[in-house]
Length: 401
Ligand SMILES: [Zn+2]
Image (cartoon, rainbow, N blue to C red; front, side):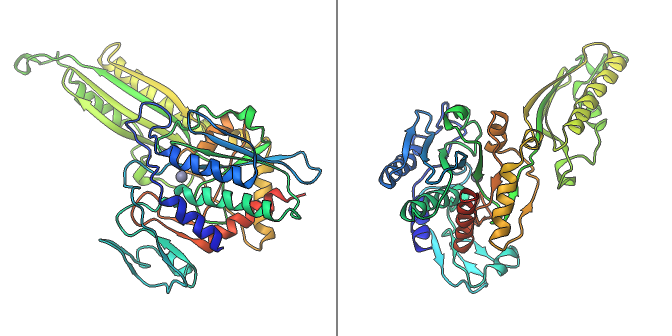
């Protein structure tokens, strides 16, 4: 476990923040610092087919040492979020954590705010110093995968299937895996190891679409506007009020989808509404799209043709739609978790994942936990013992007969 800790602390100290402003992949060159370090470590471990692409996708293989021809992939992302500092990360290690408040620079990790901390009493807790993210999202995943490789290499008596690993950039801003070569990777199925509780398996995510609603008004001097003016801002409000008001992000959770108005711009002459639509159920997402078109049809009848147009594009899909045709990935993970004496849990993801895109690209890729908590801010922390359990889970997965 000390080796896993040492490895994790080494990786989090490397700044790999991605950037929304980046114009190519990777969005920041710093992500290569970690990729190159990992490439060296993979070479030292004696892995095969090591490749680091110009887009900062690092892949490698560990061949089967038994007669299995199954190939299982594990994927973690290199970057940390652009919105909060990941520079000069100064991790704090609390061995045998006492379950009480932890005071850091400017913030307090309080079990009253974060009840999961109570369960971590007696464990090794790794926190930030209060000024940065920790980067457990997803360097916990990177460390777990690397440690699995190191442990399999030093214990050749453990018989395992073919293993492929990939470390990828720009997950936090999306698009980092667009150039991922699924065919070349050659796995039968894969897992992202990217957060959540150690016994969690995520294989459902939102179906997602983006809608732009444009309203054309008629801007006339207000003094002589009677029976003529069409105020595009007011028509925009009318449009929005025709959508189900309770299907908004702040009123929904679990499997409930939503219409989210991200931005509204309006004058008398023109207005634009920018929405994202989300639903785990593709049929229900399509109903949401249709309702928007129906609202536009109503307004066009009321105010004249071409008053309102709705343009909708799909963004990504629920991986379960494809995954359900071959559930081996989920079954292997569930069995591995059970066999270690834990009960697997599944939570639908209320967002998208790189795994959802990979599944769309032909590689079934559910997500496994890491033992990291409170990602994307200074309260981020990780539990070493849970990280170790995840390593044991993925070793179980690759040693399944
Ligand atoms: Zn992540």
